[in-house]
Image 1 (spheres, one colour):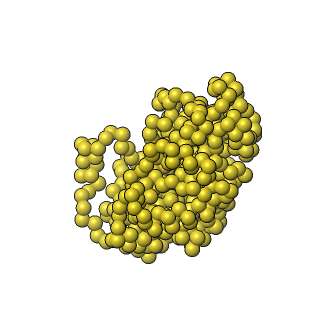
Image 2 (cartoon, helix red, strand yellow):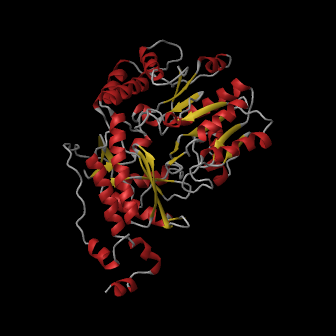
Image 3 (cartoon, one colour):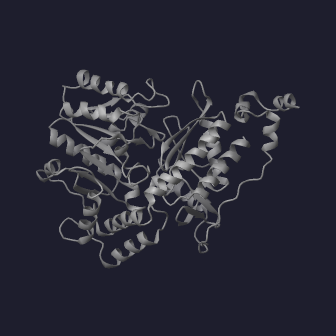
Length: 473
């Protein structure tokens, strides 16, 4: 029987059915299992009367830039959201296991954040350049209190790209040096400077920025030195010695690479590199756009897990729970350099956005979302690890808290990226009501980054759907 089943399945696809400790015939029987059911949720969105998904897609193709893309074969028309769930035009509910890293930290349309935004907008929404307003000062004070050491001066921007651009500018002005070191496979934004520092884009898409040097990625899964961080750090020494004048302006890195496939930097890497950079007169920039605001569970900021204190920290996305907001935090000494230059941001730190930001901080504390990220994230990672033991296509499960990655491969020994399979599974999970992201250099990593209000029941449903989808391959 098993031989007959094997002959009916193309050889190239058999590995997808392979599970440790079970025969192929047992697996076929298991494939007849009932699809998992989504946890109950007490909310019904109001009826939608707007244009259909087909009409919106037609207008996008005609009027929007072709650079605007979507993940799915049939893109969703999402019209409503509540906490960890999203709803399409027909009222179908989706578990959002990706939006947390995109913009939403506390949950879609969290009432406290919505009330703060609406309340401030009803009173005043104005530029903060020329006048005083309590919203920006109150949020800056609360945000600075979340940082160690002398990191206490805040500059608000509209996005993570702007925050990283400003951080690089500050480092170059402060040090009087132009050279910057970043890590391959990192991601820092979509402007000229940040695209240059985004090494993934630079050596993949040839976006050139002078004075930017791309160091070896301390990749614990595919890297040459495994989890030995100091060995990867030696490459930064070599770059400074042979690629610069011996001095640098800055080193910029994420503690966990988001777009790069939820890759946590090898232990010992950041302390070694920070030491090298500072000896060369440079500043250390921590990009917390995706790993910040309690997402890792163990700490409020990703860099804290590495035992380092940066000179400049950048953040965005979850900081405003969906509104366009970013920030740069640094020391008073470094911050002075902008006072000697004409630099301003018209809408950075506007009252509406900073009111939202302050509400986000309060919600994280009031609802104990950092602890929830730790508890639910640990449980979710354990369940994903169980899938890895079940399916050969899962090559790696990694990350921390509610910032997790699942890398798919067609061969575990060769670590061959399962690019086509990843897209297929992503689409199938969407049809079953679970939305996850996709990333990594090869586009073969599921990025699981839900809002921090995610529950263990949500985690179970996510894993059950992934399990069911893999069993149906």
